[in-house]
Amino acid sequence: MIRVNMADNQVKLKRLSSVDALRGFDMFWISGGDALFIALFSVGNMPFLHNLAVQFEHPAWGGFRFYDLIFPLFLFIMGIAMPLSITRRIERGDSRNGHSLLS
Image (cartoon, rainbow, N blue to C red):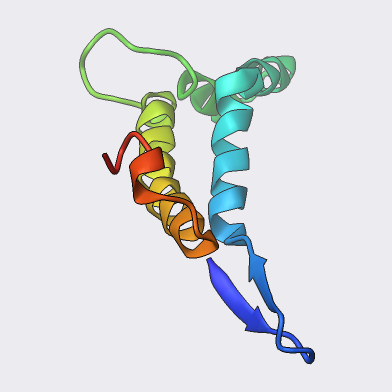
């Protein structure tokens, strides 16, 4: 959370836009963005597009692909967002005992 001092001594809290952007990117893939890209890649008969489409399928174990990194990315985002959120609530004056993670 970034604090910005205003002219009248008020404090305005700004969201961390990089975390929001990364969260939006990840939620796009979680909500089915892969289907859109697989459809786009299958329209053309180009080997390069086929190789990209393969990245959106879960392979039998022999390594991992891009699609296998989506859920770990979500967990990483949550790990970043939770401390920011909890700190903001404490600074706002909420009780430390009111949050289940801090009890």
